[in-house]
Image (cartoon, rainbow, N blue to C red; front, side, top):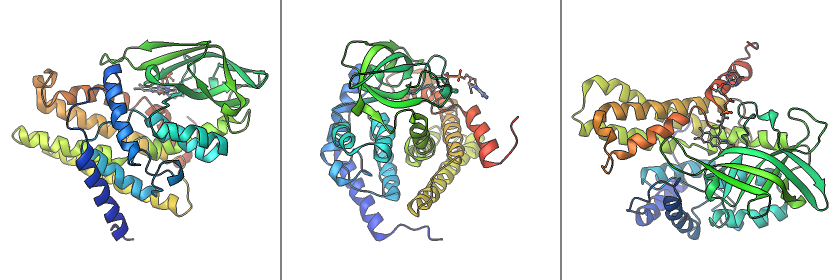
Length: 379
Ligand SMILES: Cc1cc2nc3c(=O)[nH]c(=O)nc-3n(C[C@H](O)[C@H](O)[C@H](O)COP(=O)(O)OP(=O)(O)OC[C@H]3O[C@@H](n4cnc5c(N)ncnc54)[C@H](O)[C@@H]3O)c2cc1C
């Protein structure tokens, strides 16, 4: 086992670091989940894209750098260490794009990927419905065959930043006689058409970007179906593992939070009663890093990521929450002061509370680990 980076990887890290040092905005862009903050984040996303840093792991022909998984992880470490803004294009670049690379046609890749990387066309993930959250196979939205495509009807919910997006991707029942995970198709629905109505849902922190999407006979062209008709479940499942295990939350994000937490602890006079808990967070962030590098190495050698991605999801979401709780404990009543250098901890804590819920709740992930990783019988 060799735990060192190659010269090429070190050079890549130096290149990322230099670019980020020169370009990361020094102004606070505000929350990317408000309309004003989102607009500022889009300017940053375009800067990333202009220099081909928006999607480093994509092939150069689509505006990426052809980086392998290890280089992508290096980029992410440098990105968060530099304090760069959260990615508002994430649900397209990290979730829809891998699906297109695996299942999309050449025409879809040519048409969809570049505008996505350039932050010209923004995508919302629309798995959830009022009665299909943990039980995703309970999707009730339907698609009816018409000339040249489909008419879709139904309600999608909890679409992150959906209010500011141009379209969604999700599952629709294309075989009316089917049940559960059979007879579903994976479709992209553009918002700019009759039959699409968006309603904002305010979050706990007051941000406005969540969308409920009401669809009534909205049109989906045949060219906007990804993968085979009625095979959408297979397409969706192929990318959920990479979402939970790799692409959604890279270790760099948690290493940066652990470093900020240690800085906060030092600034607060190094309260000894929190020393062990804070050290533990730093170690857990490092452990996650090593685990993910191992997964990346395995994947680069032809392996795949499967049910063990659920372990990652539980790990990072619970670690993130722990780190934010510790920060609030250090800050005590000062945590509630707005317009201070530390105001971010309270807001980020509210988001960390959602970590065990989004991308599949941790209860569901624990069931997956029990059955598919440990081989335990169903409870
Ligand atoms: C911040 C945030 C962002 C999100 N962004 C998106 C997005 O962009 N797109 C999108 O489609 N969705 C998004 N979601 C929705 C998210 O995926 C769902 O909330 C999640 O899948 C849970 O579904 P639900 O809310 O319907 O809860 P339910 O499925 O109704 O679950 C309620 C509770 O019951 C538990 N439970 C349910 N079934 C079982 C079971 N079989 N065994 C044990 N416990 C069970 C769950 O763990 C949970 O605690 C987001 C959610 C949050 C909080």
